[in-house]
Image (cartoon, rainbow, N blue to C red; front, side):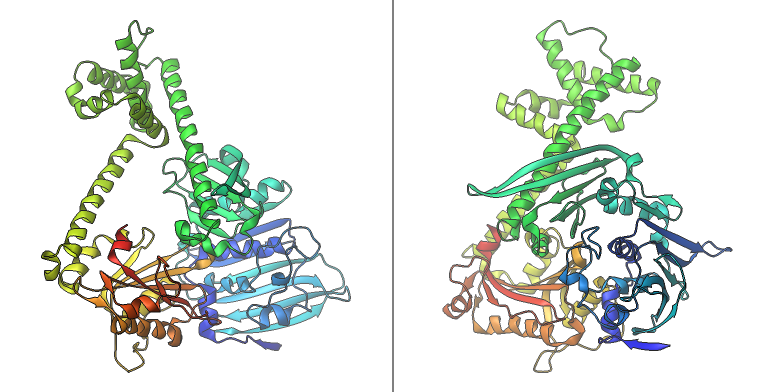
Length: 612
């Protein structure tokens, strides 16, 4: 057999393979089939007869296959895919999903040994069967062979064999079907003849859809129009899947984010199409901090989703009340005869609608629960006295706002949010006092006070971070990064600065984003209120930044590191180091990202800017 060696080290291939994310590997394998213009894609899970454990995964399609002319480019190189130079599939059938030439490496997340068997025609229109083998022990080496075929239909079978018996429980249908159905819903709905089957179950989304809404929403900043975004919201019949997808066309969505912070009750998938997003999707991970007009598009889309579900929630509450009436469990039998009764009925409908998910389904139990709620409102208001008193005392404008809020979320969620806001306001007032009070700020230290206070209030630096280290060495920072990358975090070499010394960071926050497997890191270096930030403090942070760019263990093209030095005062040297005068972010160090390396940027901020 001929042998092809990737022009990349085994460790780099392992990083691109993301071997801890089997679910995403399935998504990539299906997209590879669709990019090959397949109309039928089948994912078959092979299980052990005795224990039922997953021992192999097979992905079969009827696409045009892998041509023997393409093997060297497709499997002998990382990147430089022909897809990067085209937006359409070979026969102009579909828009392309992949472009980086890395998706095939995801197969190593499904098994120790992988094999592609593909039937396709070469440039001379002769049919061949291509066999390509790879193994996790030597990921950067693929062996391949080809034999001529007299007659056969094209297609490809990928087989991944789980010889190491790793846990692939994430691939079980109950876990995977909602995600896969959501991910491929647009292309399946727009192409009724396309069939995708997973573990014997069709991904046909039509049977699981409760509501499918198309919206057109204008995007504008400061009276400047930036075109319209197309928003498609699919509400699912059941499950907990809530996701938002972004793309420049209506079938290929390159950025995905969790949608539960936008809508926490309805299971849904929202698909945002905006032509200006082409080539700029990477900014979406920044959310509000993305450059204009990306940030405005992001805000506009999320607000449109909230408004949509506010309307759906109001309709559902009205439908619920009508259902109670038809079932004979609604506690009011006659029309209201006075303004007092009409007001009581209105309050009851709002409160019972908000609590509808907690009302029993059985008629007898529902009738009793609703009657008790009516009596509590009518005869024992002390049981609801705080809420009802406050509602009754609202003026017309505030009552309208409160009603609108109940249309958008639940009463418990409003109370919880208000409590969070109140607690955070108190914290900000206390922190502001500690930092800027002429007397008390002198006694505030970095480790004894600021570290301990901020460890429990990380929202100051961003809501999206899900891992945190406090006062840990650079080697521990590396381990956190490797863990998020799905790579082994044991037996790493100690990380040291240019002078051979180790370093300790004050706060290290990290998160794994959904889009392009990007990993975001935030390192915060805190300085006590009586420390004026100057050359010494800036050089300390720059040392850390140089470690991230020079130590090969941190190499990752999908990693983004932001280092923020925070203090109350900056001297003239620090102010002059800021790249753009008046820049609120305070960037003072940010070299061009090296090929295969992380993107690293360093900022210096005043506490007053952080707290604003």
